[in-house]
Length: 456
Image (cartoon, rainbow, N blue to C red; front, side, top):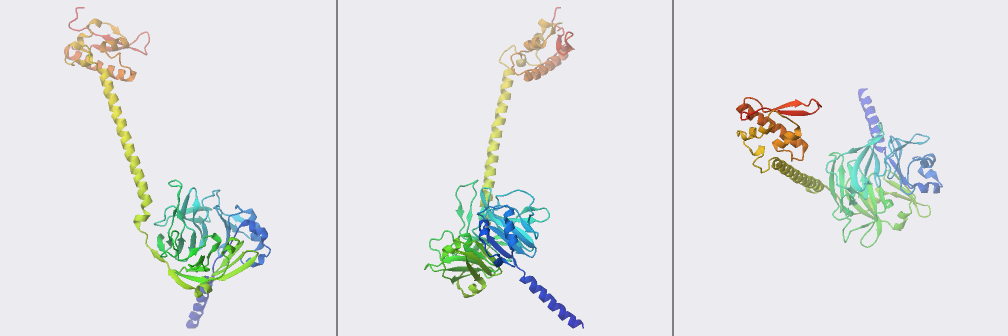
């Protein structure tokens, strides 16, 4: 009995496992102005209904930027280029889950759903290219920036492909208008490894190259000529003999195969919509002509022409921009230090100038007189017993010429203290005593005592 129960549970588990593996997202892309031209909506069923497509008039979009619809086990979602809105189909309408009003950062970005989570990667916005990985929080209705290691600097890919192991980003350019007005082409590409959560280099040995003079294949880089399925990336290409076909990349084996297929390349400039499920791609182009490709079948018929290799990124290359920033900060700190040194030097020079003003080369100046000399006290003999105003005292102390009132006040206080110390030592009492002016108590008068040499 237990054995039968175990067998039963094994097959149930196997069935559930196969069911889970069969669950896959379906992707539909088209431009909004094409919706009124659709005459047969049945081609999109059972994935997307006529009501869903017609209701897209209510979402924030640009008529000539594509809209991406993704049907996944967590729901049906719509995304519009250069917008950060996340629209979910409620059964009757598209509900915007994004609670803010930012836009312009996700031009050229790829939106995708992985393990029940919504992401955006790469694109152009706010004057620079980027390969930023953003994750949408369904509870807060906001995007957050994720920070994988070794992220390429100011890089946006032309070709992006998703696999269970990571994200492939081929070709594209590095550009930041804050530093340079010209972009730098990316020769090959990068790979975001989910397991290590780190960016790595991808080499195709020149098979895909932006600057090769003699490319093995000429790639048609129009957005509609880049077709992605669950397991393959297909690029419209021409070999060295100008034969047309698909350059098909196996995202698991990292192998490229070329499949001859005679078609007019300009049909990819007239695509009105493209539907992808599994490894099947259907699209309408030209005069309402329908095309259907099974890339698993085409890949099996293709000729092996190359293989990609995922490499560790050299730290030196990743840190070039960071070192530039460190250099800039170092220069700023050096300039700041020089300016601070000059300011301190000038302040010291002004202080010495004040000392020079306070100590003129006058033999009768009190500051030129030794504290131990009786000459200090003798300067006050003509004023014994008198009350001097502050201006009169400044004349006696020879500081009336100082222009700065605060400096003069400090100098006056110091000189009075020195005179009184000398007077206390030689006469036994202070020579200068402060008293309030009886006519105006806000001001002080200075009482001059008698000296031992006085005849009064």
